[in-house]
Amino acid sequence: MSGPRIFCVANQKGGVGKTTTTVNLAAGLAQIGQRVLVVDLDPQGNATMGSGIDKRALEATVYDVLLESTTVADARRRSPEGGYDLLGANRELAGAEVELVELERRERRLKAALQAAQADYDFVLIDCPPSLSLLTLNGLCAAHGVVVPMQCEYFALEGLSDLVNTIKQVHANLNPDLQIIGLLRVMYDPRITLQQQVSDQLKAHFGDKVFDTVIPRNVRLAEAPSYGQPGVTFDPVSKGAQAFVAFAKELVARLG
Image (cartoon, rainbow, N blue to C red; front, side, top):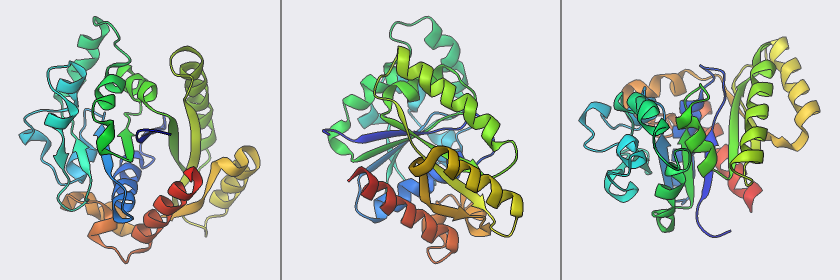
């Protein structure tokens, strides 16, 4: 396949570790020699801040790229610790929803912008907001696949069926390339019986779509964003960091 692998990190349930997954997978991929761009499509800008970039000080963001007033090459910034590039976001992006509605090719603008920079990257990871919005649609239209971080909890499977339906609709109407690449179990605690049961259910239902790597519940991963860096670089020997590097290797091997 020519050009980078473009993946959305998405789950319509909030608080499942999408941003943690995005920045740590990016840092893990960078560590094993991949050229990575992270696209922060969430107006909260958590992936931006978690990559060590002040969202308030950005001259250009993904908002400007979507409105085609700048390019990916001009708007991207380097994550100082993470070793990857970032197309940042801030509150301004919330207004893009309203402005995009009026525009032509409104759900394909990110795809077009990424095509112009595709020679620079092996992977593009898009951190999507939890809602199904025009921003998320831009991510899903640009992507080849979706990586779904999941907590093994009682309501997790409900949220997953919503996401699967969304992906089917986008696949049918807007992006025939789109598919689920895999489900990543995050914040996992094997001592909790329910989590093991849900994990077993996931494997029974989705088979080899469930990644082998499991990301444990890990304090260091949770602390890292407040220091403006991914857990992978913040505490490389922590279990969480090691799990994300293992996940990066598994992902590359799967795509083989």
